[in-house]
Image (cartoon, rainbow, N blue to C red):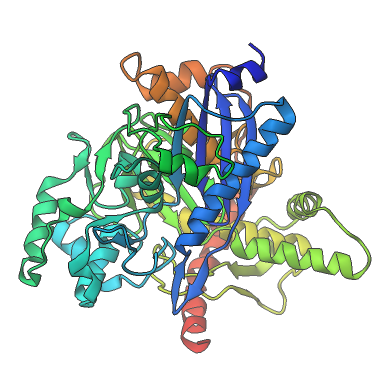
Length: 530
């Protein structure tokens, strides 16, 4: 069949992912080929000290991304999009959305970017003997309890963004195991929340005399391949404002962006790893053994099928880098040069390859928000150098590219240098790698290992979500997710691999010496600039 017939017969899967700055809808055929892509750009707001998006922004973003996709399908294939074979929702993980029995949002949505949960995270880490990062949903929930917020007694459902949107579309309170692993610790043998820790939490809050226990309010956990419900008439109306989309479409378990990133890079098997670099940056390695001890810099999460994964998650990625590129774009217009954004990024990124391996003494921190790995609860973007630094455009851009990986490298150094973890394959995806060679080369230097970027890398998590929806249709009884990706999706796919350059490896290590030493500057900036 041609693409038109494939779409008309619903031999397709649709993945919609809510990223930090863009909502993206990717329609694929059942072999994983991209048929069309829809977009909606959005941005979080800092309201009363909380990074948030409003309910209306969430709903409008969902409609807008799908509408853009629907219109492109109509224009390119002369098809009215009435149905798809399967649908999946993914989003940035963690954070806090709490609702009462009527579905009313009880307090502003707190995204992963918020780090106002230090007391809760510290207490739970000690209680569980398991690292609970500040951004995890359980840390947010317990902090609300510690702060005696009035809404807590009225909670009926606590969840994350992808699980909430899935609920709007299906009425089911569920989430995928990878996303659930950012809500509460997971028992990978049972593929569910760790029961011993659940009981410890319920005992911890018993004196609060709340009318619920933890399992009452958390979404049910599902693994990849399971059916997670069907699109209701109300869900179809919410998703497609034109009214063309039919109800009854099956949905796979919703997932967090960590799980979709693993799927999109074929990094769900043991000893495979990937780095997703964008507004936030996170590196994941599927483990074959437990860590020797608890590290506050390392999250333990899971693949979409429940395998344990060590993750170094940095709240801050390319936001400040993007701001500087935008500034250079303003300058170009000021002198009469209207440069396309793609060309601007390409030229600035590529020129960074001419910089010194250690950035010539130029140091930057793109900390828009707090950074858990470096133990800072707020951020202030900074550029600092000594007077004799080799300050030029190449080193300036290179320092911002390096620092986008800086916090994540600190976490990976623990895995590789202290835990001696093994990695057979490291993949890269996300906007950081869109310009050929540049981001890939710098990541290879950061991890001192070959890095592969597939031709689908720029599609990223939304494509991974569509693959998880397609896998549900294919059938988990036929094969594992690992086998499905390796044999059906990635077997003939092209990619490029870059080996680490020894000079860049040494230069990145030198840059990191300054990065670690300069954290006191970042801390002082947070304290001084209020």
